[in-house]
Length: 450
Image: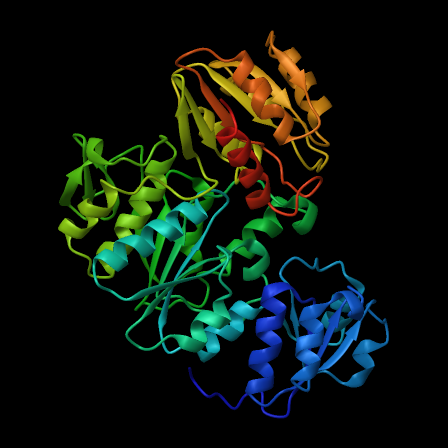
């Protein structure tokens, strides 16, 4: 860890705790900053705040006082999930107080280089796959970011021999100033998180932060099947490495005659790859490009791609029971992710979907329902999903309260050869703390079936 002096005696406000806030506050305290933590959860119910107080960090809990910025803070480090419409954040920006997320801190203290992965879909799979490729290739990777491990915690332990493979959300990237990954990956760009960003343009601009500080020595791996991603090539000085699942690219990653190629070099036969789903080809090509740029040999790449079946909660195969195949795709928190999951199967599907209502409809799903024989809807969006399914003339539509109820019903409706797929097309927060909790409940219910 670099012992930077930038924060020595600087007054810093850490807004919002959770894992990233706790890590940021502890790190800044260690770097000599005068830290104040503000979290809305009451102190008596806030063990994280209690631990920080014991370290000598000032803690204000239970509310966000509007006069808090009067204390003369020089920097705000906010939890990524706190919107910029928050009054304290708005006031900080008006006062020209920099507002960052802890990813920026991680970059500043890290001795290791970064591979940053962002995009609307495929981030977790791509991040995990790159990590596995670099690990087998003996490149000493560490994994961090939106995937569940706080980047600044990882950066504290990293050395110059490591590479930090980091999943980055638009929320995190909005709070970066100098963050510069050696390799930036943009998997794809679709309309998402408009409840946070307001407009598609603002969402895409947030994603763009992953590459605006790159130099000619860095690489930007971009999905050249998408116009928005191609436009990103104009926003960076980095060397562009395109990938495409639709056409062969001599200067990037793509397919030709059934083989994966990178910059004209044949890597391996695509049919040997075991990761399910046509949509995962984007993730595979981006990951292969990252691995090759990092010096991983073709033998190591083939070893991983012939054994890597995916990540938990992302089109994760759970079990086969009496000829029925169960898949957990709880991480499908938007319509596009569910469309991608449905495209992975040719056999009949019983779809379990529903969750947080963000105000959108679901008609975009209709073209993807051709193999769906039944829909079981739950959560805040269950009526909307049922209405959409009726419009699609789907005959078997059922409404239940939650995922746990949906599983035995799906099994009773199924026949040998069917796929039973949890792919909610919605966030989980109406009923569950996270998509992981939702997926774990599904998995547990599947294992209880006889």
